[in-house]
Image 1 (cartoon, helix red, strand yellow):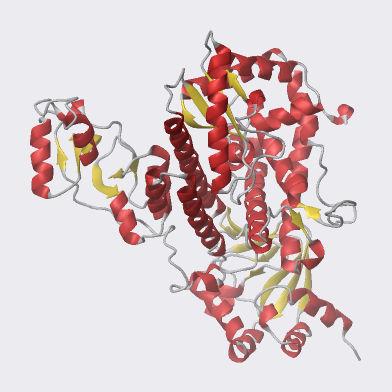
Image 2 (cartoon, rainbow, N blue to C red; image 1 turned 90 degrees about the horizontal axis):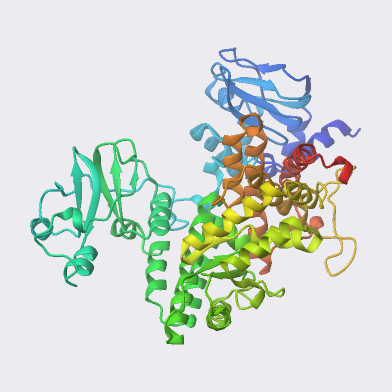
Length: 633
């Protein structure tokens, strides 16, 4: 006689490791022995220092929090295993396991572990990995149900990955006092055979001189070698604590355009210097890294050369994705490379025009590029702002020619022309600062559907090249206009709710009902953009500028609104998962990754996506309440 309950349990478990490694007969044998348990919210499954149960556990429905005293260590949801380590150790429980909501839990007999270990190598590796690490994947919010040590792609010889390891730095930096001369410092550098010297005061770093400073400031005659080192030192220095990772070092060097980081006792400029980390130190760790690509970009003399570098960057990004590097690291690295390529395209175009710049200007990345969230090569979105001038027509003509040259080069690199012409070569988006201000004011004080859409795109701008002061003036004008017309935020709020939560009443994915993508799920419009739009709206309501990325906006919102921090953190996690999922899908299909064929997803991926949708629903509910939108919908 068929055991229907056991088959239902089997059908559930086979979607999760280590059970997905087992044969049907092995899994059926275990399923017939499983105890089905029900817990109400707040119930303990086991307590800290409690004697070992005869079971380890899997969450069927609901959620279980693992606590050390009152500190939440981890949260387990559908398919997650807990209580396993204690079974392997055959010792007391080290944590409290508490039902976070009504939950159904499968209790799996401890003796079945012996069967798993003996009979199945892959399951054996999973269990041993659990015992060895005592943790799921450290980015488990992105990869529920998998262990870090179980990711075969992270085996030591699988790749050249080094970004999350601690960077090795020189623990005996050469230093000097601010009162010595440049000549004296140069002699010290020469005798020590080093390319930099740190100027310290009371053992604290106040500046740095490198070979580059000597070439550009002394050899050119700008300064005399008899002057004090303070005359040419770069200050303030950029400091980090001892345990800086390779990725953090790379990002800092790329963002600040520097080649040396000072390592101090507490990571601040006000504490004792303990070491120095150079770009060379990073390159020694591995040759194929972002720093090398940035150097190649700076040396590139044509768009075709930049195209080849971009292909390397895309390969680097693909490797990062495959190695499960955190999405935040990946976006920072790829954005820095994209910005460097754009800067080089601009400089090459300025040189080609062979004309003197008529006035100062700033180049802006907008949309996903402006938010530093563009991983896959999609179309380019950019704009240009120039200083107010009297002969506007002549100046605009120059910047339109410059923009066209830049857009053409970016197209060669791999960024397709924007179909909607959201590019600086379009006269609409190449304006003086006063014209941008007037345009923003018009959008804000006379909003309609088209203008709100433009706000969503252009209010995510990011400075790339030129005069940053022009961008600050633009930002100030936005907040000034909003202060005088606060109802604008309500219009933006209504627009942020244009896409409902991605699940239907029956918890099915909302898919496209017609067109080329019929029955496919639009992960951008239905899941990613609602999070993006809400973050933009909420950060604008706090009048915060210069924070453009969605994750950074939610992090700042968590600081500003501690009562909503849990919600904002869940939005960050959901966004990370969705962005990674879209990128993986795009790499697999060699497209934008926007449309997902749900029926081709495995159960784990469907559950992973569905887990992201609650924050989407909750953040939209917060927007609806805060901006009093119920009556407007």
